[in-house]
Amino acid sequence: WKSTSCNREREDNMTLLTALFWTLLFIVFYAYAGYGILLYILVKIKRLISGKKNIFSKEFEPEVTLFVAAYNEKDYVDAKVANSLQLDYPADKLKLVWVTDGSDDGTPEMLRKYPRLEVHHQPARAGKIGAMNRGMKLVNTPIVIFTDANTMLNPEAIRNIVRHYENPKVGGVAGEKRIAAGKADAAAGAGEGIYWKYESALKRRDSELYSVVGAAGELFSVRTPLFHEVEKDTLLDDFILTMRITQQGYLVRYEPDANATETSSANVEEELKRKIRISAGGLQSVARLKPLLNIFRYGTLSFQYISHRVLRWTLAPLALPFIFLINLLIAMNQGLGSLNLYSILFWGQVLFYLAALAGWYLENRKLKVKVLFVPYYFFIMNLSVYLGLRRLIKGRQSVNWERAKRA
Image (cartoon, rainbow, N blue to C red):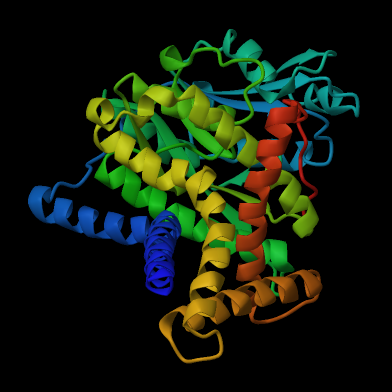
């Protein structure tokens, strides 16, 4: 009787573990791939139903401010200014504003050599969001476009962003971030490039379904009246700003033909530094944007926000170690060396993490098969969530610029 009871209890435990395993596996799959598949299907259906295409007016040319918040950017000043002066937009309607906080490398002095630039410098360093909050009080154009000093824009970027504002429902526009890939990138470059291509595809379809959920700080735009000062300790200013615009009932559109190009991180260590900051900021944003979790109030926007962002910053990274351990227990119960589904899945995970380990070893070796670096990039992307959470809890994540070294 005792033996039967123990066997039954063991079977119940295995059933519970199996259900938990598949639930966690589904969360990870959905967060990184399933949502992309579902989004593709939903957009296809919407196209069949509506069949509408955006028609833009070539005569729509409102005044615009190109806003750069900078800290010690002397290596990029000349190239960025030259790039800004070559943009295809009427010079009398495009204001070039730089706000430099704490720069002590000669950046303000270099900028003042250019007569078209409006430069606002203060010796005290208050971080990027501090510079944005201060500088936006001086902006008097109806539209402002934010960009980074180390990113180069395509000539049509301003014009392609601005045209969306003909629609009064549009409160912001996100440009496309591109990674300038070398012929033989290291792990950081290969992984980052693939990741941003996938992200761009998701943003394009998010925008088509309803709205972009968070813009990249390298290039994004908002209606000036919709800008409200963000908390001084905010880590992801671009994300919080654009999501709060959607909270007000406006749409944030995606414009793939307005792109900002920058080089990849110099190595995975530098990329991890950047990812930790983003992860800490993501967790901070989830806490500050709690109302957006209410799908009954925000509907499609909440669905997109949770699927595209929240799961990646919370449940998906948390699920990964549990998936591995639970998979091991189930596979051992069924015979780790035998040919069964759970053993195959377990050894598949082992192979994946060994590939990540190989990526670490080959980090800065030049390889032609860049996809070999993807497991390593995926690993550090999820590791950064744990490290970001630790920094956030201990209050060690500074709001000041901590730019990763670029290749």
